[in-house]
Image 1 (spheres, helix red, strand yellow):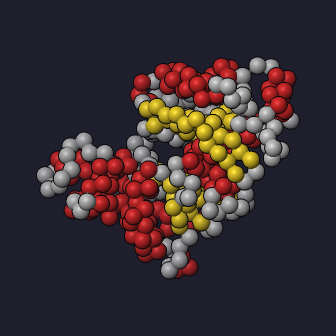
Image 2 (cartoon, rainbow, N blue to C red):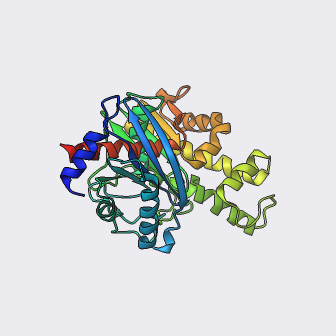
Image 3 (cartoon, helix red, strand yellow):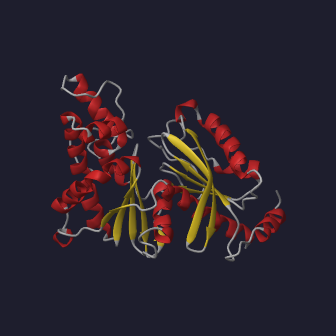
Amino acid sequence: MSHSAQTERIEGMTDASGGLGPVVAVDIGATTTRVALVHVAGPAAEVRARERFPTEAARGFEDFAGRLDALVRSVAAGASPVAVGVCTAGPVDPATGEYRFPPNLPGWHGRSLRPGLEASLGLPVAVGHDATVAALAETRFGHRRGARDLVYLTVSTGIGAGIVSGGRAVTGHAGGAGEAGHLIVNPGGAACGAGCPGCLEGAASGAALAAEAARRIEAGDRTALVRGARAEDVVRAAEQGDPLADAIMREAIGHLGAGIASLLALLDPEAVIVGGGVARGLEPRWAEVLEAVEARALPRYRGGAPVEPTTLGDDASLLGAAVIALEAARGAHA
């Protein structure tokens, strides 16, 4: 599609609020990839036409790119979107969309989805780190709407952070800012997928919960968990009173508290918003999470650390992808 055709489409999709038309939002996680059509009107957003498929990064980058292209086309059919926003587990360079040794997307280093999607769809494509764009979404649509200094911490298969400072996303020299999963919280402890021993991701992520369960089951600890237990199995077993699963969760919460306390000390945000699949499983134990943070935090945070679960749920990253897609559409229209 030519630039003039893109301009005509953008002008034709102006909605009643004076904003641009719908965008396609893509959220690439280590386990699952989601695609949706998002309509943004001022401070409100509506997510429609949700679809998902297993990421299965080990099948290869080209295989994934082909499956993603097909699903984006399906979601966009008949909707005339003005741009595509892709948020992804990283590290990823937002300027080029190139992956930088992503531990949970093996074999994708140096590859970028952006050129292929732009050529195939004829639309501007923006790429961002999943936690970074989720942080932007929180400042636009979440409980802390309007916040100028905020951290979004995603606790899922891996762990990462998005940082907004002075109202702008902090991406670092090459898009690598926000890798909070590699803060050292457990010296001498297990390594993450990137090989960082003792880091937060190696101690409190979904992958870490599953790995610790496997280690203890192999060591003969008594538990209702079976070999091959996933993170969600550990969370569920802990809720049902399994002592081993509960011990694993308590240890992970302690390490998570150390990581969040470090972020508070380093960045002094208005709030740390916590999301992701594992974080969702922690909501019934939120008082324990806050206690773990405050026990390790600077004195000013004891008795009132600004740490909150996201109110946007799983939509935080999709809404963030929509935000950067609209920015790309405006750039193409300028």
